[in-house]
Structures are given as C-alpha cells and as structure tokens.
Image 1 (cartoon, rainbow, N blue to C red):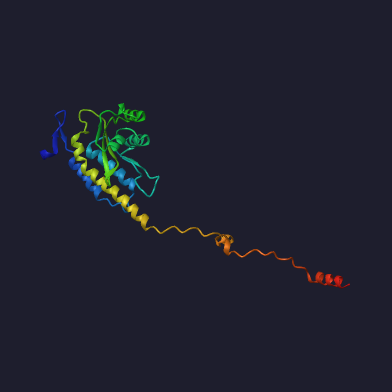
Image 2 (image 1 turned 45 degrees about the vertical axis):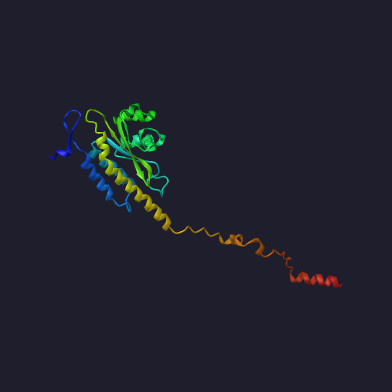
Length: 240
C-alpha cells in the first residue's frame, strides 16, 4: 500500500489517511444535480457518507437558513443518524454550542469535551450518546457563512479530529457550498419565472363595488303601481 496513504497514529499503529475517501465524497456531492433532487435527502446523504470516510462517530450539517429558500418551514439541520441529528438540533435551537460559535466566528473549532460544553442539554445529550468530541467547520456560500459542518467522535487514542482531517475536509466543504449555492440560485430563478398571481374576481352580486361612486347612477324612488280599477273609482269620485 502506498506510504502516502498512511501515517503513524498516537499509539504508533498505522492510521489510514482520510483524504482519498473524502475526495470521493466530494466528487459524489459535486456530481449531484439539485434540479429534481430531494434536498433534505441529499444533505443527509452527505452526512451519512462522511462517517466512514472520515472515520468519525457522526456528522451533522447546521444551516443558518432553511435548506430550501422556497419553503420557510424547510429543515435547517441534517445528520448522519439520530444521535448526530439530536446534537445538531439542540445547538441550532439554542443558537449556542461549538457549531453556532464556529459559524459566528467564521473559524474552525475543535471541542475536546462536549460534556463540559454549553448549553446544558447539549452536554447531557453528548454524554448520553457517547459522542463527546466535535470538529466544526464553517461552510461559506456567496461570501458569507451559511452554516457549519460538524463531525463528532467518541474520543480515545485514535481520535481522528485533528488538523489532518480539517485539511482533508476542504474538498467536501467546497462541494457542499456549491450544492447549496445551486439550490438557492434554482429557487431564485423559479420564483422569477412563476406567473404573477391573479387577484380573485368578486362575486357577480358584488360587482357594483368596482364602479367608482361618481359614476354610479343615482337611486330614484319609484311610486307604487295602482291597479286600473282603483284608478277609475278615484276618477268617478272626483267628478261626482
């Protein structure tokens, strides 16, 4: 096996370089068309693929805005599994924790012990699922940070969350940013191409409301119609 694909770990055992596997994830993400894709499934799938490629315990993507700009209720957190999704949602909901901190500071952030990190719900959830370390990498879109890609590990001597992984993740972050840019641009074009909404026509009985007051015909009272027989009796009475 090529020596360039292996380095010595902290215990002296050979550790595989994650770069080749992460390049494959980046290529797969880059080749995905967003025109007819399920955006949530695509982003969750990237998180799933990152786990074996980076040799981590979990992965999550925390977006600042909904993934699909056409749907304000669209998801903003995606994960490789239930545990990673839970950790991501706790941080997004509280707008606190290493993920949002890396997002606000626009810098990569390594957290050695999530069980000692805020918010308290995040610390408790990390202890519960065993994902106690994290690496948070900002994802830039259109010149600003759109979210953060977060990898989780269980700790120990073979912990993969280090500088080498930060460098190896660069192609994945670039491909992910490109896909998010495509999603937003497609949404913008579709909104521009949509026909203008037509106001509802008023009910037929209500059409006079559309006529300006100055042009409406005045209402002239009509005298009640008197039967012909009664008119004749009145004439004979007047003549007598």
